Length: 253
Image (cartoon, rainbow, N blue to C red):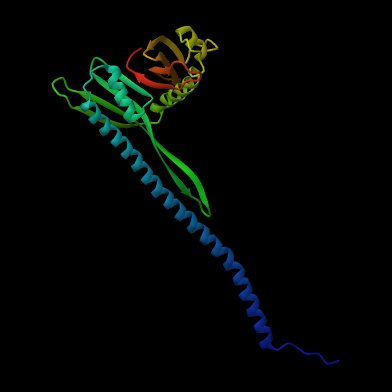
């Protein structure tokens, strides 16, 4: 039987096809690697820009809060520390507002935050919260009616105890809303501190004001060794079960 030998032309074509196939097999993962590298680099760049924008937004919030508060303080006619603390709280929502009677200053310590979506390599990575801690200090010179504001960005540790105090206040509002119609210091203490730990709540007084009960409580917390305390006035409307309770910080207990 006669044999047919492959021609050099056919063999060359086969070798070229094999070489081309191997190159394609090498190019596909290389292209995928390059794509994922670029996608990761691009996502990092986008996230960095979004983070910078979020930080700028947070700082703008703190600036507006300090400016609005200073204007509101300048417009008020009251000089009572509790009233001034209330003005500061309405504009800053700071859980801790310290009053220094010696220097006549009020310092609100509060976190400000901004949410944005983080970009993933293939899909969106989800929402991210950017938060910064600030102290806002308000003062008025003796001969002036205009209040000034100083704003300082602090390490996050300066706000940790205050955040917990904010949670404590929310819990206290819920507990006080379940009280019976008759509110006394002993009853408020029982509701707020059933385990008798004397922390974080210390009831100072409970009194009637018009159609409402006002319970003054010292709320204390210590996170990472940073002890913070703040007096709060909890106001509960009388005559209804589970009446809503509001809470506002006050200068002293």
